[in-house]
Image 1 (cartoon, helix red, strand yellow):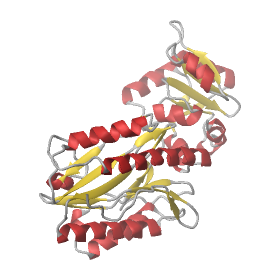
Image 2 (cartoon, rainbow, N blue to C red):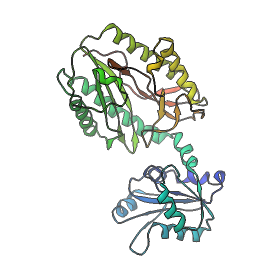
Image 3 (cartoon, helix red, strand yellow):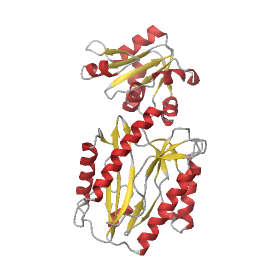
Image 4 (spheres, rainbow, N blue to C red):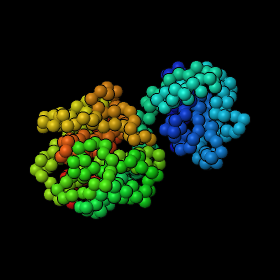
Amino acid sequence: MNHLKQIAARLPEYGVDAMLLTSEPGEFYAVGFHGEGVVVVTAGECFYFTDSRYIEAANHLITGASISMTDRSRNYRAMVQEVVDRCGVKRMGFEEEYLSVASYQIWKEGVTPELVPAQKLVNGLRAAKDQEEIELMVKAQEITDRAFREILTFIQPGMTEQEIAAKLQYDMLRFGAMRMSFDPIVASGPNGSKPHAIPGPRKIQRGEFVTMDFGCVYGGYCSDMTRTVAIGEPTEEMKKVYHIVLEAQLAGIAAARAGVPGKSIDAAARKVIEEAGYGEYFGHGYGHSVGIEIHESPNANTRDESLMPVGAAVSAEPGIYLPGKFGVRIEDVTILTENGCIDITQSPKELIIL
């Protein structure tokens, strides 16, 4: 899988003769290969440069690009300059969101074309997943759902947050994941009020919520999900908050479709929580795009006015966090269509009491 033709087709729109891709996500999106290399896309030809550690794999896996290896006499900049001279490149787009100031200066001094910020060229393409990308994300989510089913039979009072996080990671790997899409979050009891709590030695107790936010990478694409479960009988307040969050998530999913701004999807979910009197306890956005990276654009938050494209993969994750008491978050991943969205997360969302 690669997206070289799609990138090449958008070069005129951004007024550049070539696109330089130096980031790991940009490299993978362009040529479908996880290595350490540089991609140059022109209107007529595409090039991939890497070193001796990856050249054999690159030759085996990459199609649609001329592949060359660096050596002691030719570094990446020299190889890119050869392409510049051969193809007459005057203006070259680059990924300004990934290139450090120091690296930018090195590239600016090492090649002759004008370097033009063109992150939006790639971001716009990555925002709309094609069918092959969606299929990989569905598979990643299936692995994550399966790990959730396993964890429900594993959790016991007295077990630590770290033990649960370790089990989630082990199961996702043994079910076929390449790696985690992020370090799992496992937060029990009062730790649940911290949306990005780090799993620690705290032991799970009866009468508490446990929030688990986790995901994996399959075929280069991420999954992401959160479930909050009760260990023993929850209090009435815990049940109330859980169902408010669930209602908010369902409202956001109902509002999610291509052609609407992310802030409108966020507003639909946020309204439920605010009307229930918990608005001040929902501090983050409703969701973010997911793909090669766990956080991509566009986002479904209070500020993002970008119109969602068909094929956007957007998380649906409202939450309520009560400091010193508990927190609840429920998260699925949805694929946006012209008429609505498809929820690719299959785990149940009703309150589970273990």
